[in-house]
Image (tube, rainbow, N blue to C red; front, side, top):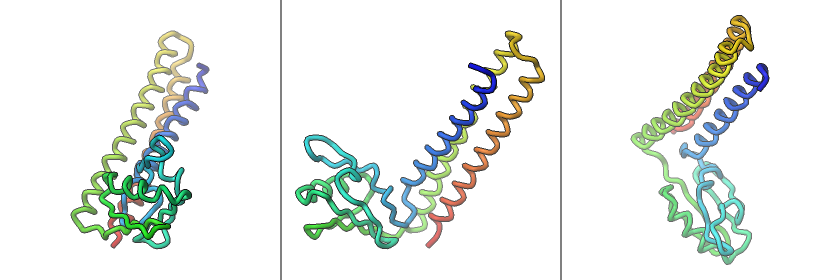
Length: 186
């Protein structure tokens, strides 16, 4: 691997970690209804388990309600059962054409638990970014040891990796701050 490709690879991996952490946080309920809340739900349909968003349209007409409109009306029972079985603590009701999933308001204790969960997810992201930094640093140190690169060049690249690490951790902290504010909002 060429020397400038190591930094690019490190930055790409950090970007993917940031995206993955954002994705994980979007699945954590914040008191507001979002279609992403039902992403983990798998529906028994057409001889297999399918993601809910592949058998129905999921919308949020207001902050306390998720509306699920199946494309195939015969799946309405299976979709309702799948939502009930998922460990999301939601109680769907159907009227024969759509499924309404009301979101109960969060109490203070539950909000604090969700904030702790968010902090854990972000901390896992920070650890992953630090591990990526370590991998990149190790690659440069090997190049220095084998005399393929000067000490000054290695120092510059290590500094570049550290700046990227700091930038990504700062972005993770901003994402966490935003999610915490969203959860604690009553």
